[in-house]
Length: 252
Image (cartoon, rainbow, N blue to C red):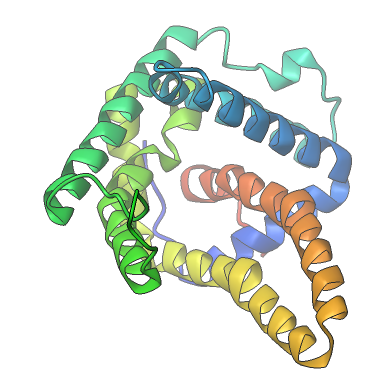
């Protein structure tokens, strides 16, 4: 399994190609994303076992969403067979991959606790929220989590579509992400501008004009982030996989 080393600009092209998929069928991409989020929230709410079950289910959820994006890109029908392609045949391997994801998540928590000198408890009885402390802790957590994110970014699709063994899929995903760190840096920067910087600037400007305008704009931006930006970001997992492993250039 050979991962291409792509120019940095491809990180931005992934978002453009993802938007094209979204534009081709907004209801389907949005529905798949909302379904993904619903399952994530529902499983997390299960007492005691939820946080342990979620990593086991995530690989299959990602494959279903990517199947929908691939069907849209190819212009074919999007039925249950298309959406579950690779999930049934590779269900055991996907659960094993989920087990590795669970181990990775636990390692993140352990490493974070070691760095912070204990579990992160920014809010508690008699304790006020320190925004600077919270941001610093979140930044450290993101740094610790990056290797795990890289290891599982491509792994579900490698396991389901290319029939790569879970451990090898994790390894190939990490290597591919490392080889394309420039593209991922541009991707992350562009996503941050779209999802954080632009809404912040718009809300700050609106607040200076009118509080009511800022309130209306805040609601509108939340809707856009949920029903437009989130589906585009989810589609970008599929687009980046296609670009890195199968040479299907993103938006060029």
